[in-house]
Length: 370
Ligand SMILES: *Cc1c(COP(=O)(O)O)cnc(C)c1O
Image (tube, rainbow, N blue to C red):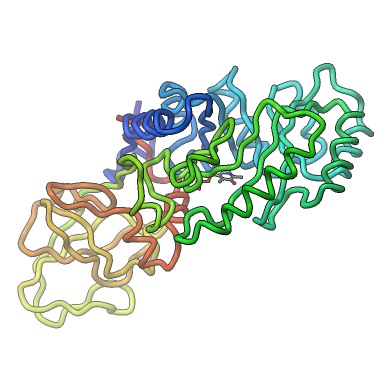
């Protein structure tokens, strides 16, 4: 099953067994009653939503979370029965479709509910989770009054409260106090509800891994599902080993021996020394190998070698310790021999977090599943 993008040897290899491992270990680590909500937004953090969701489900996930209504509709095609929660605010006009597709929406504003009520009533109620802002400052009601008003509107609508949740902003940090305060604030507001909803949930990956006492009815496990620790602080305190699901690999396209002073790439940005071997790789910034990653190492024959010269749109050059044949395997992210390059090495170089790197590999790189 090759499509036109798969003739190039540049590929993302996704190890679905790693996703299953991470999901299973989290489930056995958390209290028995806690359900796993697999967060598969942004195409499963770049790993492919259909396959990531399927692996998580096989490992015991009970529900999925995505960011947008469109992502929910895409996931619905491969998951016809599972519960899907949209984490962001959906347009009012999507509520009728959500009701019909059994997609669960996040509700945060009484005004939004009033606008839904102004539409034709749905045949089946649309299930919703009420969002409480306990300190993230993004979406959610913040006070008892706002919550009471929202609940009153929902009770007179074709919406049914299935859950209530909040989001931690600092669960990946050394200082546990901000998260403790958020949890307390959240539980206070949850206790103001007329009735406990089916699912009360608060934790993201960092929360689930470092605050098992806050697991409640469910945790929303995103980055950890793919084997990436949310931060260095979390990485140092992992309750079980996470297995990384993503490998980015390619093959040497061209090899040449340089003479002293010859230049490499746009702007003549690298000058070779006499006798250096330079290889060209068929991967560039259009694939997600950001231009500012020049100097980053890649793995060839189990050894680290640097990218030299400016990274081009579709290609880049590396400096070899000796001659290697064209077609030699190169790993940009992942393991080769005893060496490993993790996604955090890129994110540090790019002054960002591994989340951002994971979601920026372009669709031009085919995802291959093992
Ligand atoms: C993205 C997201 C998550 C998952 O966060 P991770 O840190 O990747 O586990 C959970 N909840 C909400 C509301 C989110 O937006």
